[in-house]
Every structure is written in structure tokens, then in C-alpha cells.
Image 1 (cartoon, rainbow, N blue to C red):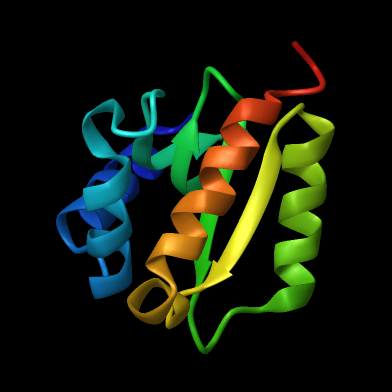
Image 2 (image 1 turned 120 degrees about the horizontal axis):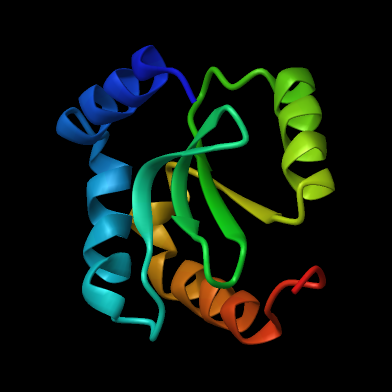
Length: 114
């Protein structure tokens, strides 16, 4: 991992979007029983949220996400043994309970590559 990538991840943590801030309030401090990190470098990519123990990555997609690049990125992360779940950023404000329930279910499943 390059120092530039780590520095960029640090800047992203300092400048979270409103949806990232709201979701982080539900993920931080092991509230779901597992530790999450935000803006974590994983396989050369910066994941919005990552639970390394369960090999789960959560991504929030804004209006201008490049779906083709996301598919390639997700493929690399899946190949490395991670599960990736994506939510539209706007849903964090209107469907936070559903999102937390989905994440909780995924945490119970665990990684197929333990």
C-alpha cells in the first residue's frame, strides 16, 4: 500500500459525506458486534467501510458512481475473499433500519474464505 493511498484515505475520513457519517454512527464502537474501519485501504482500493474479521466491505454509492469500474473493483475484492454490499447513499437517510438489518445478516454469514 502506498503512502499516497493511506494519506488519501485519511483525508476521506476527515471529509465524510453526510450519508457516510450517519452510517458510521451505527457501525462504530462494535455496535453490531464487530469492528468496522472507515475509508480502509483493501487490496489497493479504499473501501467506505470494512469489517476485516468477517471480510465484509460496505460501499455507499452516490449519484455519479461508475458502475463498470465498480464491477471490476468488486471482482478484485471478491477474488481476494471479501464480500461487497452496496447501498445507494440516499437510502441511508430513509432506510437506515433496513440497511443495518442487511449488514447484521451479512455479518452473521461470515466469509466463505475463512
